Image (cartoon, rainbow, N blue to C red; front, side, top):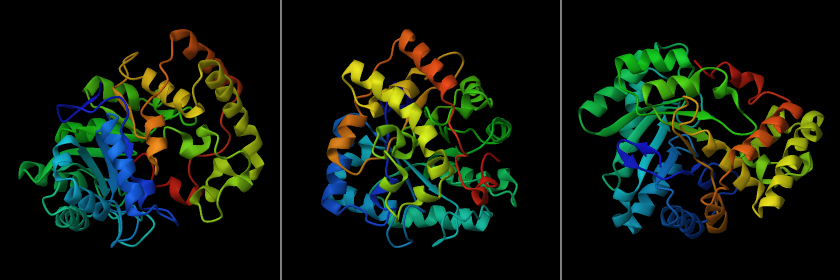
Length: 331
């Protein structure tokens, strides 16, 4: 079981992004049902964002509504919120101390005491601002008892080491999945393991690709940002789906879903080979999908060896993000 801020949070967390940041967010009753299912099935770490939607409708407003309706659940959840972006933009970074302070204050204002802000992180390190300045603001709130701890997002091993030496870091959020294995090679997983910092693995299902919901490019809704992601483009889609086909074969053999195989693979790395503890945070907008995601497949060493061979045979084609966004990653 992964621990964050000294609390056990299970082996799978819950990503809230899809509940507010999409063209057709689910209605409140559906969102609440999914959130309740997460808690009931042991996913007690919730990850949201001030940027997940509009300034007037994002994770914070939904959380305030949920904990107003279910106040007894507040202490059961370890909540992490991303911020530090310019309000109303598509995650445009502003890591200035003034904006980080604005962002945390906005989180506290909207939550209004209904739920303690356990972790806060700037969504991306702003290359125009020294990282220690941005993170130093969060540290002020931690010292004042208004925030529980500091999380980092999309950072490299050197930045983790540098910031942790100045301000203790409670978690590092990075992308990790069968579709994105970078942290195993770039030092992030081992640096976090050495420093005792848990990793929060976002997009552990490859933004839905590893669940099999997209069988061809045309299956992606026209309003979805996935249509702009390099790995989903028509010129590489048929190559990338070869990996999914192999995962589907394993899932069929194990009487599981491809997503449960993919989550099991992520969890199998947790605390192994010098790596940090790893907590995947799949998103889901329905109760049924939450239940599926919180029942990952337990993979044996033999299973992992088979999957390792598959990854070598079918390497993923395309970058994680469009070129315009890549400069903001892994500062």
